[in-house]
Image 1 (cartoon, helix red, strand yellow):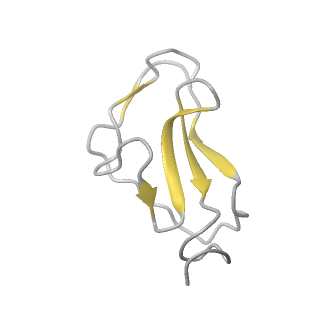
Image 2 (cartoon, one colour):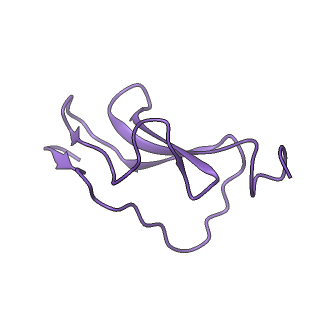
Length: 82
């Protein structure tokens, strides 16, 4: 994506049931510019837990990509707290 995406207070909704192994990440938004993403999803600042099993980052892949990482512990991870 080139240009700018303004996420300010936008909801993050995932559909389907992706099979993501614990510790794996996937990119929601890939940018090619320094200011490619402005703001954050509604109530999801950097490092927040989303849908009880993912952590969100607005600095993913060493740039300004938005990524979700499947947590390695906690609900739904198959390990950790139960």
